[in-house]
Image (cartoon, rainbow, N blue to C red; front, side):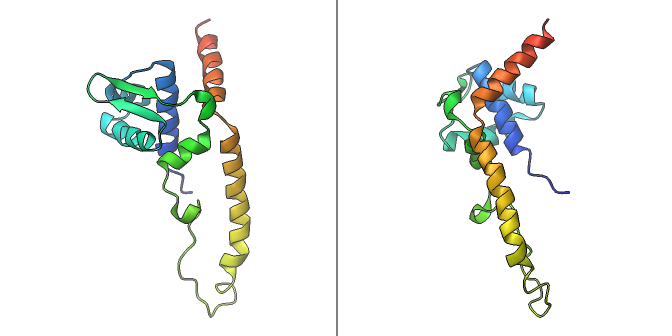
Length: 145
């Protein structure tokens, strides 16, 4: 099964980390994510373009431009994932129009896939980074007891 890329989960990780520890460098963030700083900088670039963070090169670090109450998971998803023509699922391009299934499969299937996408987007739009920061704080507190 093909998965959505890790850009989304890495972007959320970056935002949660920067909220907890403002002004981290890409190298410090990469240490938490356990990846290389170049990949982190690519994600940071997308988050910056979306107006979610600012990055000061060198030792300046990364910081949030919005409050965690004002950032939804859908905002993050849209910032880092490429969704062509606003569709999460890509349909195969040339089913056989001379086949009774091939001629109609997309129109039958598309509405159901669209419902699934809308449900996912609704849930992502409903969830703010604040909720995740609160859950993360509880987990961290539980570990330190």
